[in-house]
Length: 262
Ligand code: NAP
Image (cartoon, rainbow, N blue to C red; front, side, top):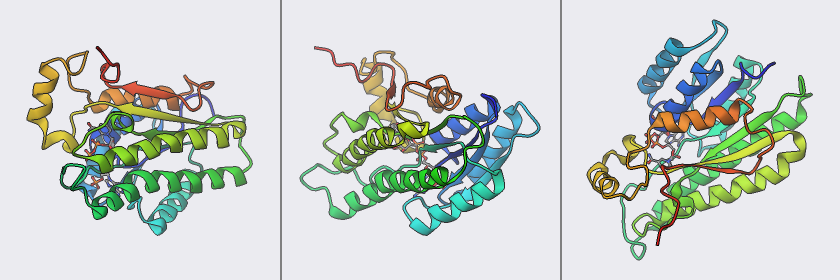
């Protein structure tokens, strides 16, 4: 296997950032296992866009419906994907949810925190654990590098008082990256954190006007929304071995939003 032609499982690839990642990988010559929670129509659209940009006839794009917060779903998806592709070389833990309601920290509910932790934190953690164990039992087919990428958020470090549940889950996911990076480094598996800022997707559609105004007033130094394509480019660079000596690194894709100014 050379630098191109990896088989990559992308969670939450039916829409938004996950779709942007799947399409960037397809355009670079990789095959993609497209996971979705239930929106098969959107997942099929992702597959048809991937087909339209692919480089090689051999590239495959297959859909796996699985709720990453459910153990049985995760195991079934991994088993099916390994069967269908022969081997999965990279995992992109992208699937995530926003809180149903934005509420002040003093009113935030236990149910909301449970939801956010099970999808945004536990889902990626245990999917990574299970795939890592599969990898460690296999004879590596070559000296190939494997990688795991977590899509966290500016919220891993930046406080939003009306969605503390989301911030807590993303901060935990950021620590998950460090833990797996150290645990898997000697196994030739690199683990990265990609930290998006404010990205135009369904997740931000409900608060588009508020973000629009903040961006226009200079909140984001590069003065524009981020796009799923911005994240796709960064993830493709990681999957395509452009950062093979950088495990545990955080890549900010946020137009400079994380840089504090006095
Ligand atoms: P989105 O447009 O709402 O898309 C969410 C994706 O995740 C969909 O493909 C959805 O599948 C999938 N998904 C949701 N729950 C799932 C579950 N339990 N199991 C499997 N798949 C599930 O969100 P997005 O904006 O692209 O966000 C993607 C990731 O980036 C999330 O982790 C989010 O926290 C993070 N992020 C987003 C922003 C932003 O500004 N948008 C900023 C920073 C970080 P269905 O289509 O089947 O529902």
